Length: 416
Image (cartoon, rainbow, N blue to C red; front, side):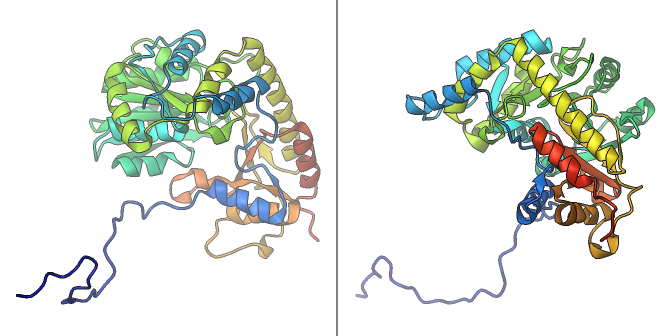
């Protein structure tokens, strides 16, 4: 009787592979993050990085110390999937005080691995394939890949220059029976717009008329200027049970690498978001949640001082952009400037490539010859069909960093 083959024995091969295995195609439209591409270009050329929104100044010391103490202590294991109870309580308390949103920390607050994860968890959890999502254009680069991952169809509504406002008639025309969600970002990246209460009320009324969910990306909620106010659409009448309000620690406390965000929503909306979050990332980093509770307990004076410092930085960069011959809208919030270089005489022939839009070529020129890394404006538009004379600058930098960038930009347009 023939013996059984021992474990690990090679069995006779009766077939041979003839081609590579097939793979899914849903990610084919994805391209590398242009923002991170420009950050690498800046590092390669030793340029000042005004592309990626990474601060070059310190985080609040008490927040950092809280994280260090948590790491040294017993806070290095999994938390509940949807977040530490004390951190969720701090989030709910801050939302009530600042955003005008009442939320039960037990059932209506979910801690996520950054705002990016909160948005994709909301899309996957709340949308079915084929549902339409209204997106105001220009938009932050993750929104469209998130739609693709969720199987949703984006519908674009333009923000019209020079003030990047939407036309209410155009917005209404985008709503239909297939619309399930609208994605709102205020203060806005990349333009620096802060949507007014009246504008958000228009959106809220359309959401209620067409039975649509609003997902509000409010990561820059504490950064705005002058006598303006940040308004959360979730606080408006009729929006409490149809809004997902998303924010995080990264921008307000200069801890972008911690990747801690959250989603606040009615329990009916929170339940599917938590289902996705649980299997997508399990939980956000434990010690940073401990420190997050400390961050959210900082006094109002912290935010007032932060806004004043950002206003000064904004003014330095805006003046530098204008001195270089470019035009721009003065940002109302967040920490970005969209500038137009159409009037600049620059050596385009040295940087043109057949596969590059003019703004991508100008960004190459900025990094290699000017010494300032920026983001091509077309990367914030569908198919890169618009924004070909636009650049996005980031002013989350020390004042002296921005002053040096402004000094370097004085040479723009001076041909060697």
